[in-house]
Length: 440
Image 1 (cartoon, rainbow, N blue to C red):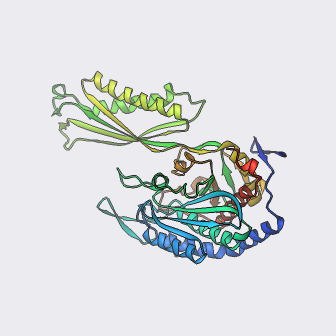
Image 2: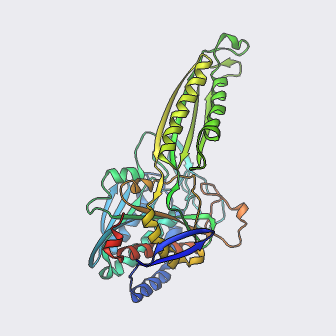
């Protein structure tokens, strides 16, 4: 196997230069991507103007399904509630490659002057909320629709089968319900035919336009939620000695939790975060309540560290409560695993990213403590997930609106980079010699 060594941002990246896509096919695909760019922008603006919340992506799913059917792609709808799966069989034998795009928007009121800004409203937990594609999922759907159209035009040249996964509820279903990638996997999206590899991407408003970033192994963190119910003894606020104050106990637990990461976790191994996001207690100023509730999130990039932190949270909360004569009940929910990029696969696909964006625009990054349910696919089959930059060149990086905010915005030119990258990883993987692509 021929090895090529490149130095990017101080990191040594090793990848295999093994793709055998013909120059003629590559040139044709590149030209078709460029010609389709205006349509990709048009699709993205439609989805942006008419967003839908998690598990409510009915109109979005119908739009996608109609597009795939027109391309002659076999379509399955209603997967994981509102998901759409397309199956395209190539003209030659080869691997089964899954490509994923998430479809859901967020309960955010859009705050900008775009002519296609969302005015949509929806009901969430009995409350009317604004709806906005404040994380770029509208671009993901548009890009994968374009990938499907281009590959369908060239299906006789394809080796293997492509499975297009348009996934609902990446942002999460309602509490207590399973949804998104987890439910899609449970319902067999990686079977019939069995998927060999899965690729996904995420647009980034905080990364320079045209820049692609990635990381082998743990790229995005596991996300767990915790709930701590503290029970004390109610008393008058003027006589706290007659009760057991769960608010004080809760405050001590919050401080105690901070030492788990700062003093009890091997941070030279991987990063970790414990955040308390909610503290509820009491109904009146002069009444010490009987109970208090804490809730928060845990982010880890290593399964052993994850297990240890869970144990430490339970120990810290229960023992602090016990020391004050109170009790603390701890519940931890595993929400999303680590987004883990298969290392050999990642090394092989770096060359594809460089072909799509230019070697100077591809870089390895540190792990991100955000979470992605793409991880559920990667738990079953080798997967590769990467970021595509779409921050306008004239934007001050220190003032870029973050994802999940009312001012979130992307430079639509970044979508062509994403389109080319998804096409190139797909084509390069299917044209790898079987002895190489089968190495997991």
